[in-house]
Length: 215
Image (cartoon, rainbow, N blue to C red; front, top):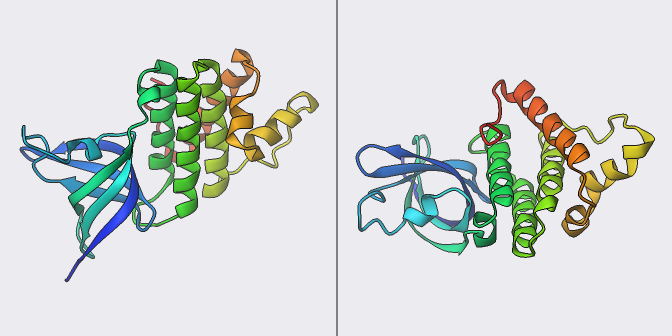
């Protein structure tokens, strides 16, 4: 069956080796949703597309898509950002990888949802800003808010869950406020820790395995 060559905006979520020198990356694209993309020969010294196959990379991917094939195939592309400040801050990096893992776990392949891509990029850009400005305590709030919003978008939402009067305003901010307001929440290790634990137990219940980033 004939395929098509497409240039799509995408976010690399995870990758693994494939055959002798190839890699397969799961890339969330605006047009096709989560797609397994084969990157031929990128583990050879001259492999030019290797950066696009790395997790936590936002780029434009030139891919060949053939209906019924196991993978799409990378034919080119260009980086938009590698989130460099996140990579220099352990807390932001781990929450960034956690954000990718959540999107990977809670979305099926080949089902496009541009809203989920925009949501994820918004969270990663907020983590990048927090890392660049030296605000590591903001990363758990951004990660937790992203998880709650992704749950809503995936049908596992808790926005209407009954919460205490003390936490009601926080619950609204986490679900609805702009990212800069979420990142500006006062550091509170106890409450943000409980939020991350809630995210972990929810994902384990839905996906039936624990989150890797937290291990």
